[in-house]
Length: 126
DNA sequence: CTTCTAACA
DNA sequence: TGTTAGTA
Image (cartoon, rainbow, N blue to C red; front, top):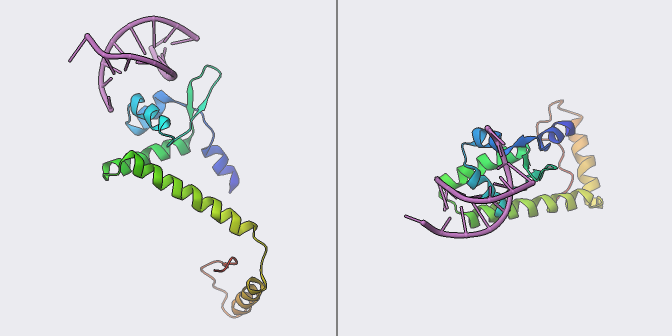
């Protein structure tokens, strides 16, 4: 499922299309970029090129704004989100401890009985 | 014609 | 945020 994310991150939309898709003015879109909330690519002519992810984020920003959250607040939200993503990568790269191995073996033992396993294994403990 | 940056009767 | 000027 990585091909999908790749397409969504492809910057192929000019600001005009994004304006129609988000109902935001060019002024607003550029301002949000200025605030670091989005980082659209630039083509050979210095024109902003947005990805579907950018559009989603703009729509998200618009929602936060209507919910009464200001620029600073939205920035914080994305900062925390970024930090959590980095933390998750750290956990994923962290070598399994003896306790993790025990949990894995324990989970597999339980799965021998019921064929149904709704929540996938959660290796990184703590 | 569309988009960009900078600036404000 | 809108809008406008002068470009690319």
